[in-house]
Length: 154
View 1 (cartoon, rainbow, N blue to C red):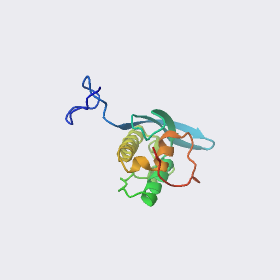
View 2 (cartoon, rainbow, N blue to C red):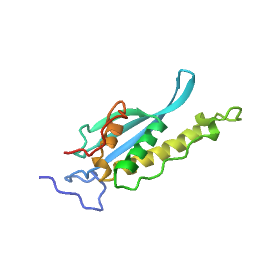
View 3 (tube, one colour):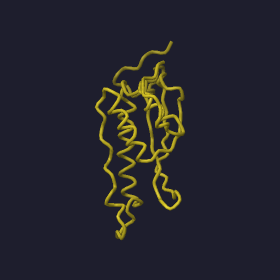
View 4 (cartoon, rainbow, N blue to C red):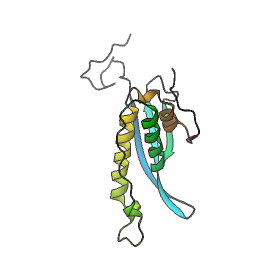
């Protein structure tokens, strides 16, 4: 029978120990054109060993507006303190700038780090893990904005 890992031991790094429950998400920016508009979608890859999630691995594409949707849903329907998102890029979208605006590599990397930090904080919160909107955000190809908010049951 596997033994639980000591609290100080990194998860799953010691032989003979059970892996600590966890969920991790990694983002990879994917700039693309959508008709006349250009945008950056983030390929989001998740891995988890938490039993409440039906998929142990998933990969979805999300835009900044999808992260805003998740934040708003959690603020409205859950009892957790939702961390802030990285700021909007309104000034970077102005025409006649001397740089690449929202497609500048340093901006994309800064935003990726902020979004990844946001989703990992949310996904790691035990109360948020029961929220239907988080499950949909992490594991469904498309977000049904007409879903019925509620809790996920094991």
